[in-house]
Length: 322
Image (tube, rainbow, N blue to C red; front, top):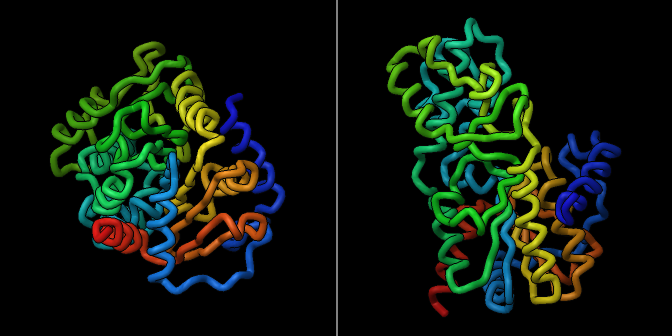
């Protein structure tokens, strides 16, 4: 087990023990009672932390994509209707993820929905919060850790700069994990969308298959399938582990963006543990709902409650002035 995966495992145990607390939007970690700085001072502090850091690790979660318009996963809103309207009308789903757990009339229709889901993220333009973040990081040495599967970071950075520990919409795996292989899903998804047209299902003979066992394929993602935790999965954890261990004695800034209460064990709590254990580590979080800053690291951290898109834009503008 890699260094970072071990951190995740430890925090998952904490999550399991206190699951009801987390489910209510809380945390088992004792939080700081310090009064937050005014917003303008928080932005200034963010800029100063970036300037002073020798290396930066960004932890990007679902709230980061949602801030840029990728907010169709859990609610029936304008962007959801734009991409999934024909399924919303027929089935009444309230958000994209609802369809992944539905009882479908056929596998052809299930794959029609799944292809729509994948195509929407695979072909999406890079969202503005990601572009602002890119400007903020431009002159720094940095690495990206993400639980997002929507490929946004991969449209900006090479593979060796990003660890995708929850999977990636660009790849298929065997639904039954008969093999440790993953393979390209982009071209297959494009063909599925073209074949489907305005229908809600794909042709039977186009349902993606595993090239090894002949069973159905499935996106290489955690959350709504039998996620393959094989060589590719381990390689993602190895990247983030190596980066942190190589830079643990430097002025390391950990920036957490958009972690929700369902998955604090992958970015948030490991970042808290690293900030507390590494002498020159610092921590910043930005979240539109929560300002969680552990008491243990209250003198090494900053928690900003606000729209992530606005915060990153304001930080970029402030840095541009200097």
